[in-house]
Image 1: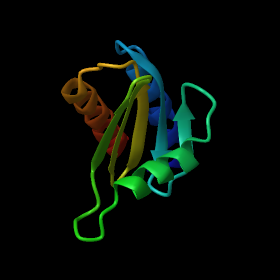
Image 2: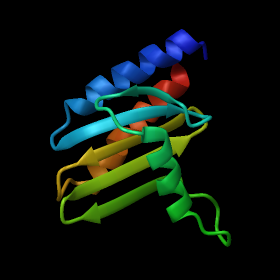
Image 3: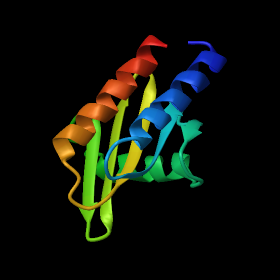
Length: 112
């Protein structure tokens, strides 16, 4: 994937995800963990690394997705060969739909 195409596809994914109900902020990172696009300022790369590190279990394969819920909101993360997408949502977001949307956006990056 060309760098310009990756950035354009990431920006389009962020825009689509931002239209979803309850999504507060989201970001797309490339396969190396570098930020491609985001809907809000944050140290997304470092936060994503913390999420994946916290979910890691040396006895199991690396997780393809993570969902963390707190009283203040929820964090969703998916990753694949093209990179990763992280989203912060309101509390009680429908996890199955959110993960489905994130996976669809990630597949779109694969095709870009």
